[in-house]
Figure 1 (cartoon, rainbow, N blue to C red):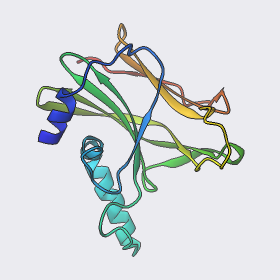
Figure 2: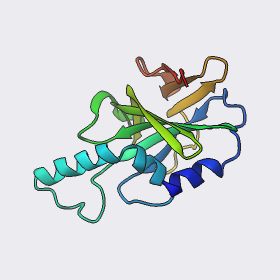
Figure 3: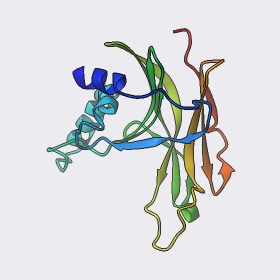
Figure 4: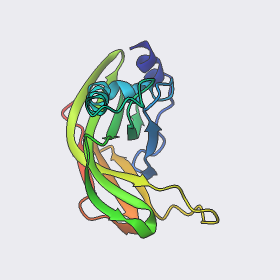
Length: 183
């Protein structure tokens, strides 16, 4: 809990929360200080994913977690911090769309919202959301973000907006408005 509290209170306020920003990703296979908050949000699901791999006889991940990645969007305010987090595991997600030419896979994965106020945290189940999984970029390709997951926060309505674009086109069914109230 100390790691989470210090991570939450040590951040500056989110500048222009309404601006669309690319979601950040974390690899949760090995625990680290940088990913501890996200691993804690998903501890039960990560443990279930580990058990599923072991039940199939897969022991490759005995020194860490079975494959698990996470995408998040964080909002920092003077009194609280909110983390919108989507967990990508084989056992928790279903395939929504595959676009091989773009090197993109869209999955429907579990979504959680963690609200930190001082040393207290509330974690809410947010249903399912689109998780964008990208293949490694080919050598010589541009750094233009033609494919990405984005989020923004509407302060007036206390709503996080999410979306996924592939080749500059919005992916149907991946735009969401997630209300964070009542709080």
